[in-house]
Image (cartoon, helix red, strand yellow):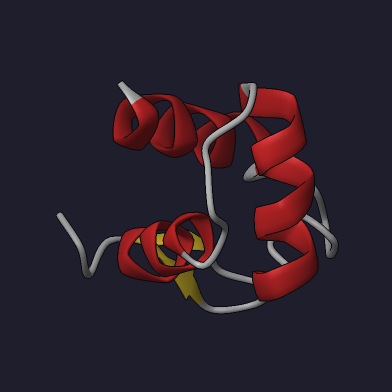
Length: 63
């Protein structure tokens, strides 16, 4: 699952999202983590079509 592309516009995979999450010192709520992941990977800043997929991945990784 790590190599599954989540954001085609910015070429961000599940592994990229996981790496961005673990760069922080602690997990917060999903929306705050989404903003952090966006800043690191730039996912969901192109067409925005992957927004829900990114949130799903973050929720799964935090769970």
